[in-house]
Length: 190
Image (cartoon, rainbow, N blue to C red):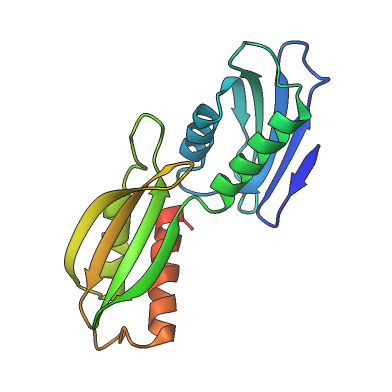
């Protein structure tokens, strides 16, 4: 089975190993890639027995993961493979959500990331967001971190109330897009 995107290609092979399912991944290299893979595997009850990461080549990274289900056997059910690959691809391609919304007359930057089943969130989000905003000259009036639950998962939501800036007027769509782009790139390490 092969699942592809412009940023991630996942291939599953059940014939190479008698005890494990081989999951081959080619994806854009980014900060937190290994964290996202481990978190998603844990959430989907998939155990990684062995893994090999290649060096980054032209912005892409290749990974070979030998995985098993919770029963200790290879994952041979095509439906389980497809669900795991779809979830893994989604988490690798778009692990964070970054938007700017209006909060009355003010503008608010929202950054959301999925929380592990253990309740822990992605490391360094607050630091990376404040670093990106500082590099743009955007001041933060207030910031808060909260949790939000949906039907299938819990999210850690960072809310930054932004101060108006002469260099980047927040009423401008171009300025908002520039802020979202810089924050996303800083969070992803691009």
